[in-house]
Length: 163
Image 1 (cartoon, rainbow, N blue to C red):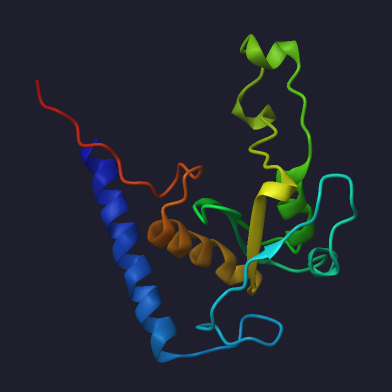
Image 2: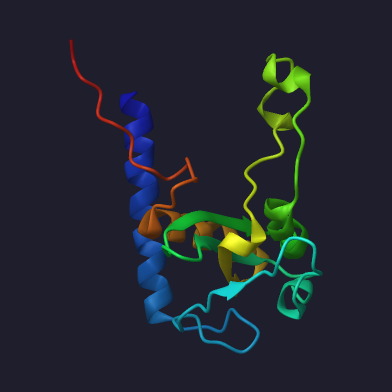
């Protein structure tokens, strides 16, 4: 447990150092927006409609996306794609998955879980296009700062109670 906490502390120190480097060296990571510009949240359409053009234009790109509730603006999830599959990674969250009986009986491991899904008409999404090499770091920073409801990694652990 102590080693894990120490590893988390080291990771946070590294992320803080990367933040300092980014502030000292501004760069363009989006199509035409500077790194420190605000991200625009946009709707992803209704359930049966085609995705909007801005979502379809994500094909072949890498980056980070933030999904938030349209009404309450609560950040629900932060995700990334560093393999130029941002469109597929993002739209997977809006598909209807059916978990078969075997999943609920524990026959499948975590790798077979289709993941979280959201109703398209209830959420909005902001996207930051980044270089593939920066996507994981950017995602980790957003998770740490925004503490999204559905992300498990990057959340503070509850302190162990010594008994």
